[in-house]
Amino acid sequence: MATFVLVHGAWHGGWCWWKVEPLLRRSGNSVYSPSLTGMGERAHLARYIGPSAIDLDLHIKDVQGLLVSEGLEDVILVGHAYAGMVITGVAEICPQRINHLVYVNGVVPRDGEAMVDQLDAVRGPEFTTRIRAAIANGEGFLPPPSTADEIQRRWAIADPEDQSWVLPRLCPQPSASFAQPVRLGSSEAQDIPRSFILSSESGFDSVAESARQSNWGLHQLDTGHDPMITKPQDVAEILLKIAGGV
Image 1 (cartoon, rainbow, N blue to C red):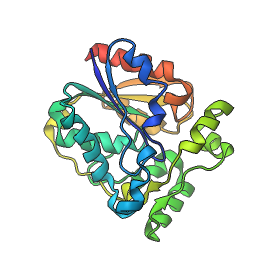
Image 2: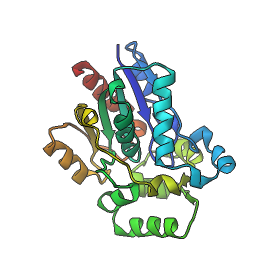
Image 3: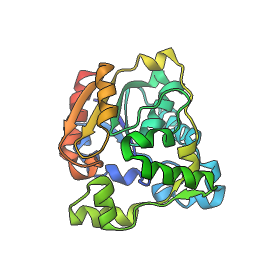
């Protein structure tokens, strides 16, 4: 049986994997979907420790802490969007616990790059400029989409039921998590097999093409940026297929 750790992206929480979890567990697999510090049901922590303390390193340590405290080995570590930064960082510090990295419309950083450096390629210059300005102005949080139209426009979540489920669960993203660069260099981490799941309406085509050229496994879905919400069955099937090849 496989062990999956599913890491959410920006403005989300572990809740975004709820539809996928039972589909993976049905085969007897172990599944963990933690909420990163300051996110999801842990969003209140940002008010106690301050948003400036919630950076990429802390989110990396969140996932590392889960792997260590639960004694997890041979993990299929899955990251959505911003969590591509997180799982890349986790692989650097505990590569021996990871059997496969899966990027779901995820950013794939190079050494010294921050999340904000990835935005232009996947979200365009206008969105990137707005985020950079917020960080430069010292704004502690980046606000989430606040209307159904906005999440449809940004993430192609079109089903009204999905929109009603997602909107109240979104939370502000601590700006520091987008500003801090990742540090890479572990040869062990570079040897971990990797796969990319690309959604047709995600805007991550250029990232996926780079992954393909690096001989990663590439899986494509005809849906929006959050396939774990809009196509959970398909996501689960891909993850199970990856697990079968580990």
